[in-house]
Length: 408
Image (cartoon, rainbow, N blue to C red; front, side, top):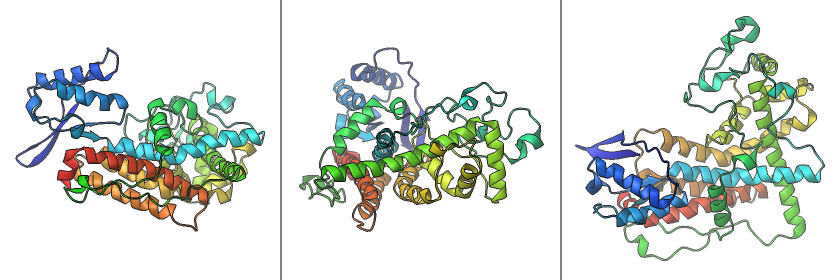
């Protein structure tokens, strides 16, 4: 539990408590634990709003917490602020997961071997270099204690990311979608995406909550024929396959010392700017799929050269094509706004509540422009529509929170 407050006009943030939660993780037990923590430090009369992720248990906890009394400023759901970084992650899932899930059905229909997280013996066999696994993603600059010239130690990238970065055994979101899936998020997205596309009411004025809901947003959805649905599913699957291939390549280079050395030679040959690390997409890092694709596009010349010139390392089923870059460019146009928002609200020392409303507006505008652009293929317009539905859902929910109206 962290507390955010102001002191003489200066915003402050401090860690209040770390709760060892041994009881069932339900709303009743959580409300008791939270109340005991704030009561112990004597701030029950100062709590105004509570920020949580969007799990249903958290939403159910707030009315229980308010009913305990002694918190005159806290008004249950009217004082609930939903985590913007989690919302951005849900938007990214709505965009990308449809492609990834469709990939398996496409491979099955084409009788192709599935691309999964266990590739070949070299990836999983014990190796003296395996412990380091090219820890460039953690900012380390050495690969074990091997000879520097032989292992290109001096050319390791300096990523300067969180030292608590993902482990070597982190699950790939693209290669293992079933294992990476969060049941609460999946249920939430199914509910949102199956509903109508509606715009939330404006929060520009304090009286906007009295206005009626606006008309439905422009949509690319229509009653498709079975043939059209199958064709779109195939197109979505092709996009998903390309994401899986890049995830496989990132994993291969990360775990295979020999592939890693060849990869660095390719980057050096093309005189690419560092960092040279192909980032992995992992379920524990919300923006990792976007980061993986963005880095792959930056190093695209080496990606293609490596896959074309090393058939013993990269089999045909894993091989990316030169034309696949257009797919990744289109994906980035949709995913990058969420990655930037995630970074803004995750790493900024003191993000302001008023910035959330502006972010909702910006994301909605970006998705609306893509969704209504008839020059774009339907796959990207529908992806933008999915993202826009999630944005609209949580923009609308923000109207229940009094502090948003005050912030704008």
